[in-house]
Length: 321
Ligand SMILES: Nc1ncnc2c1ncn2[C@@H]1O[C@H](COP(=O)(O)OP(=O)(O)OP(=O)(O)O)[C@@H](O)[C@H]1O
Image 1 (cartoon, rainbow, N blue to C red):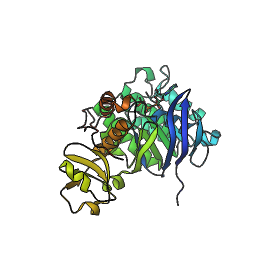
Image 2: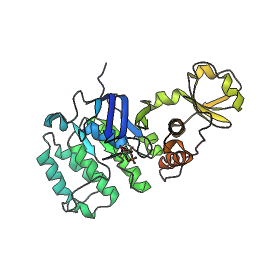
Image 3: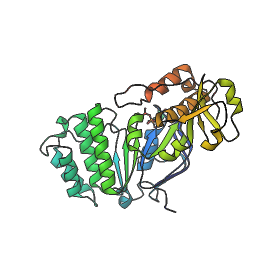
Image 4: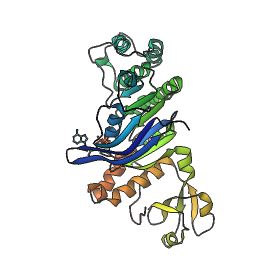
């Protein structure tokens, strides 16, 4: 069996008394574009920082490409990281960034980095401080790709971009990952982006993994069922209601279990499945996230369209896990 690119076992990280990740179990297969989604404060950046070796677990373990993250310079060279807000050196030109990349990275592929810069239409003489947000993100992506990483980690790289810049960035990201033959792990609040480019999904909430798997498989295992509420009680064993409201539910089940009954199963899309898990997680705990306020912010923090329109969301009534 191919070894996982990232493996977390009982991974826990605390900031003082605050637990950001609690006993996380995760195993990411290679060759995927993995979407990491969850509301604000879910622990996404913490997980990505641990994967890059920028932080150490409080307890439990995380292994990346078979070793402790940032175990040595050779391991560091195998992981590319695009941090939140895609930081660059404002005073340096695009060409100087590429030169710096060459000086700092033993596996540097100057041709690839230049090709990415050309493809993004960046002027090598332009200072990074004068680039637009979209151009800065493209430069950060070119620099990360130039390392020829086996794992490319990106923390909400497109969050501040307008819809066109975001679509272009995602297109270039997919091209880069294909060219490198790498795995990418990408955190995002935009479910439409994740639906568009990711073939593996991790849903994180309350510092724990709520759902993980290849998107095609997850969609095959979930259905939206339209039903009169009393019919919930008639669902056969093996059907797990993730979330329900007055007249419909998102369930996890082998579709063959749903063939007979007073319900009507229809395909669920990725945003519907994600929102069902997040709403269920928000209503399960006793924190602000479980309150009406928490549910509202959960839904608002997760947008489903590239233009930021908020998804149809449901109440948490009747959720079972
Ligand atoms: N340096 C820190 N010191 C104390 N608490 C922190 C620190 N960094 C993060 N936290 C807390 O840990 C939790 C997880 O934060 P994290 O940034 O990992 O979440 P996130 O899912 O990336 O959120 P967002 O989507 O808002 O970026 C939050 O409650 C946050 O307030």
